[in-house]
Every structure is written in C-alpha cells, then in structure tokens.
Image (cartoon, one colour):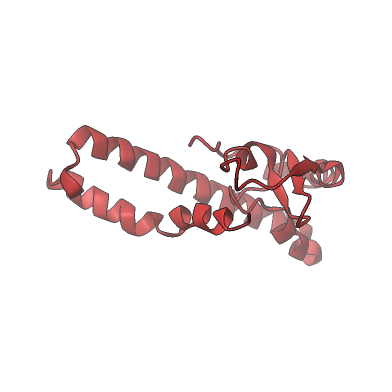
Length: 147
C-alpha cells in the first residue's frame, strides 16, 4: 500500500531536468514527442508551479528549524511525505502511524491509500509551533494537490 508514496515524490525529484528540457524545447519551438506548443506551455506552467511550491515549502521548513534551534530535529517528522510541506490538517495512516496532509492523501488512488484517522495531537503541536514561531507561517498553505 505504501508503494505509491515514493512514486508521488519522483516528480519532485526530476523537476529541474524536465523543466530545463521543456524550456529549451519551447524556446526552439520543437516540442518533445510531437506535443503542440500550447500543451507544452501548459506542462511547463504546471512544472514551474510545482517547483515554486517545493521551493517555498523548503524555505518554510528551514525557517521553522532556525526558530526551534536545538529542537529542529523534530521538524522532519512534521512534513507530509506527499506534499513536502509542514502538516496543517494531519491524518495518521492506521497501519504505519505515518502522518500525511489530509487533502494530499485523499488524492492517492483509493486502492493504494491507507486507512487514516485524524491526528489531533500533531494538529495541536502544529498550532503551538505556529504560535511559537509566528514569522514562519506554519499553518499557511503553500500549495494544493492540484498545483
């Protein structure tokens, strides 16, 4: 059931190379695999949006680590493995105990999605971190599963 999560993150790992290739193709008007220019522009726009979201999420995580100082190690446990963002509305996978952002886990195909329950303890922790580090914007959404 957990096999879908690394696959979901593969797109994030290859953004730079794909984005560069698409920029080059668009600038020379030679779309890869025969894609029309407008379709290529749409894909490029989606990749830029994803790249921006990932970059913003990384900055927010880094800022929270700085704010927490010696307790910064806890932050890695408060990041959704699907979105790469800090948890705002966390749910727990019953089988693994892993926390996910509720609106991201809902987009995992139903046959691959673990059964989840609301994670009230992590939610309260995130609220406390938001109060302790208001400059970080812990509970502010960076992106959505749709882009």
